[in-house]
Image 1 (spheres, rainbow, N blue to C red):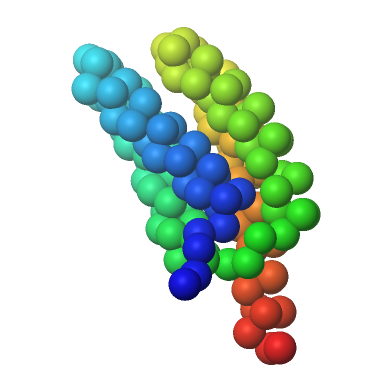
Image 2 (image 1 turned 180 degrees about the vertical axis):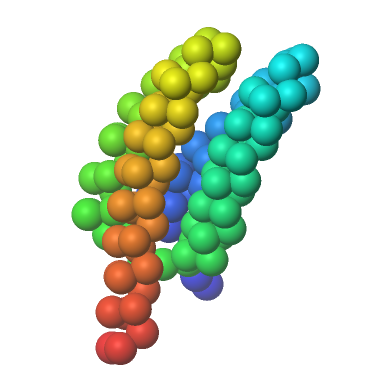
Length: 119
């Protein structure tokens, strides 16, 4: 029986936690411009959730596992920024930094999947 890749499960859980945090934040705002910004970033995270879901059964890789620490650090920084979401520039910078490291992991996983498919 196939098992899910632990690194991808960790990345997936991180993305879901951030999506939940943004969902809570948008429910608390009374600023329509901030709500639109939060909504846009929530969509970006949701897109990555779908990408990771499609890769969950990829074989484990040391390279991918090594990326998890960077993602967890960026996730903690984003969680802090969401707590200070009124500082929009800092929030957007944190989202960008988080998604950059997530995207690197997703790209690696897609390349590993493509290489495995050729074997």
